[in-house]
Amino acid sequence: MTSDTTQTEPVAEKTETDPERLRDLIAGARVVLWDFDGPICRLFARHSAERVAADLVEWLEGRGLHGLLTEAERESLDPHVVLRAVDRRHPGSDLVDELEERLTQEELRAASSAMPTAYADPLIRTWTAVGARLAITTNNSPRIVRTYLAGRGLLSCFAPHIYGRTQDLHHLKPDPHCLNRALNAIGAAPSAALMIGDTPSDLEAAQRAAVPFLGYARNDRKAKLLREAGAEVVVESLEPLLTLLRG
Image 1 (tube, rainbow, N blue to C red):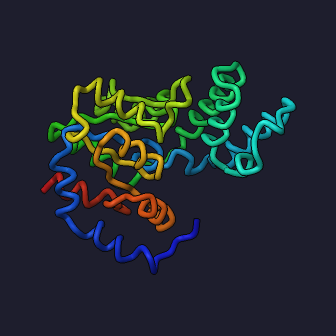
Image 2: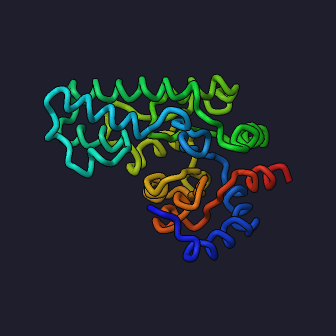
């Protein structure tokens, strides 16, 4: 999980400083599918996702369900890993519904202190102004996405195309379900779209939906994970996209 700049610097130079690679992606994008937590904001910037995951584990253990999770799942520090693990073992149960609602409430609390990703707001407004259709395709609750976007004055750039976590948790990314929902609702071919995401699961979902992918990585560790997963274009800032659109 640590960064390896020796191995990744040549790729970073190619993907971040070659405007033709970015220009080609942007030029073909009539629809832009955004992951939420990462490319648009850091949802848990001041409200630790690790703490949320630990709280979910503690809640399960308080109900006598310590053995429901493997050691790796308990130590994952990712609330979505915990949620998916419980859903695999008790799909469609009241237990899963209650756990999902607890996670949604934690996300709603986090939304009030989420940190906007640099250049995301003007990039969203500019892309909308030049005629692109935008949609959110995320594993987060659509309720918190709407709350955050409304607070930033961005909801009209996306609504009604906000596709997030549903009760069918097997449809979470890397399943391409939310991407396909967005494309079908907008009436766009996958080749006319672009997915912006910051995790290997975003990349896999885009690949399975046949949608071109642009990786956003706020640090070397995330950039390394994306490139190792096969992402061909990764940027560590959204500024080059904004510059190209305005140019």
